[in-house]
Amino acid sequence: MAFILVAEPSASVAGALRRFLESASHEVTLATDVREALERVRELAPAMVLASVTESFDGEWLCRQVKEEAPAIPVLLLYLPEEEQPEARSSAAGAEACLVGPLKRATVVSCVSLMMQLSKAREMVSVVRTEMQLMQHQGPRREPTSSGSDLEFLKRLLFMEVKRSRRYRYPIAYLLLEPDRYAEHIAPLPAAQRTSALAEILRRLTESLRDIDVAVPFAEGRFIVFLPYTPFEGAVVVAERLRQRVKEVESVPGLTASIGLAVFEPSAAKGQAQVSFGSLMKEAGDSLRRAQAAGGDRVEGGRPVLTESVSE
Image (cartoon, rainbow, N blue to C red; front, side, top):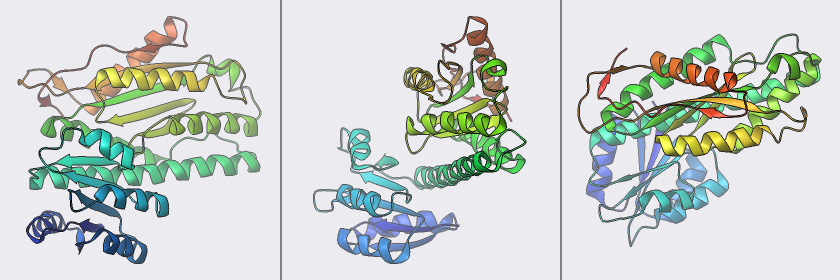
């Protein structure tokens, strides 16, 4: 359960949103004015804000204010059906996501659930980065990787997103990134330097991603990047950007990385092929090995899986 603020001037729309969210066991408070909503954010520190955008209700202004004062609070902007550029407008305002009416219960609840999970995942990333920094000063004896419980959480998150992307028809992408010749360039470093190098890689990755994306270390010298709402072409652009960012790592001059890509894009027509979290991770792993076999410093990944069937 999460405490959610709904900023909506229409009593009927606000009431419907409240029913949607309370049916999913969330606690909801309402605000009918943007300045009232901002005061509620300051007083109550909600876990999330839903704000409408109309001619008479400037939810984008509210979003910008929330992001200035409490950037960790996710914001979902709600646009009217006639809005032609909701993604661009919501992104410019700093929102994590947007929905365009008419709003259905399943869509609202699913989107809120995803945003809450990604918020939790970002907190996990922050904890991992903090642990890395502490280990750098304390002289660690082990590689900084996600703990077992963190990795299990990440697996559950990604598995649910495979099924959710099928149901609500949005693409998701997975990237597996590994520094080239890790055994030669990073593994031999003293523990503190090795930790520092991996922490710098993670920092440069996360700085290059959207707020809704997740990047975490999950094995020795290997990182997984999860990109919701990202089709194949967009995932390739992100992967190439991350590949270039690894070259900027100052603690290991000349470092490069190989990246394996896997994308799931639900098609309009039902198919027979099966796709799962495991199969996507295998595809990303196979792509990573192809990139490494080709000499490294490259992105490999086939065209997206187009199917309506999801196996567990």
